[in-house]
Amino acid sequence: MSASASVSSGDRSVFVPITPCRVMDTRPAPATVGPRTSPLGAQGTHTIAVRGTNGNCVIPSDAIGLSMNVTVDNPSSASYLTVFPADVTRPLASNLNWTALQAPVANAVTTNISADGKVSFFNNAGTVDVIADIVGYYVGHDHDDRYYTKAEIDARGHFVPIDLFDSQVSPDVGSIAPGRPFGLVIGGSQAIFVNFIAPFDKTANSTMTLQIFYYVGASSCTVLLSPTFYTVARAGAALPPAASNTSGMTSVGGDARQAPATAFAVGTAEFTLDGQAGGGIGAGDIIDLRVDGGSGTCGGALVAVGAQVVYD
Image 1: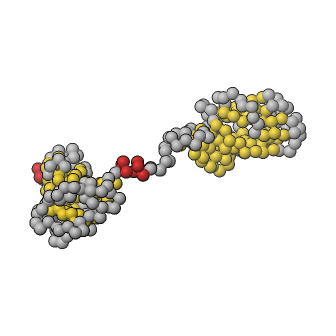
Image 2 (image 1 turned 135 degrees about the vertical axis):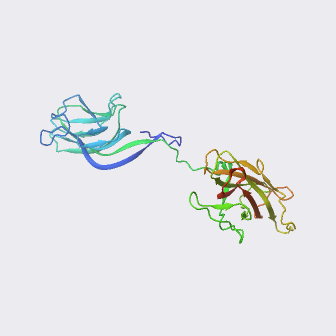
Image 3 (image 1 turned 90 degrees about the vertical axis):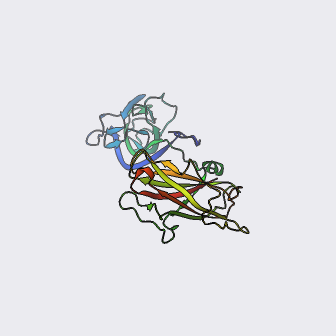
């Protein structure tokens, strides 16, 4: 365990509560739990294994610390008890203190576990019985709980998911692919239509990237996905007159794309979206576009299963 408040990975531990179980009781039978049946003597140290099955407890092998309720009984003289991991020098500290012939005394004790899974109990003076009940254990916490800062999120980029089914226009809605991942069959008059508003948190007048995710029932062949219509509507600006205009939208790597090396694996087609005369896309601009395609040399159906727009 560690008391560090650092946010780096692996320097903290997590508490796992359990139903209390008795791992040790040195009192005579029938109270005895564990191998020891006699009290701890003066300046005596008793070490027990705590990982795995011991006494009435089962503690996992990755436990690094314990939370216990420790009780002393039948003390012959005033003394104190120290509980500590078995692989370190006994600390100058006490977990319980008592007077001679005092009634049972209990206290909550938290301790690390030694590398080989053991805990030690030290009695300073006289003789005393010790009872230890485990109420929970600690395990290593090996991931980072920090929130990303705005700068870190900005560096990772942002995206807008596109609903391909909502975006379709009759009669070009495309058929639905049976079996396999659910999606739209693209080809012939069946195209991908996308309409969205540029987010207001995007960098002013910068480009965006459209990603279309697809699959074909073949491997290591070439599919076709190409822009056939693209407009960017900005307040006060006229729309381009030609329905076939694609100025400002560019296929990354060309319209012919290598399909994944495994049949039905999902591939990604990317398109750069710019202003129609360059200059980027402004926040709040309305983008309408169409992408046509076909299975090319792959044969069978080309199926679009999703799309998103990535931006800074």
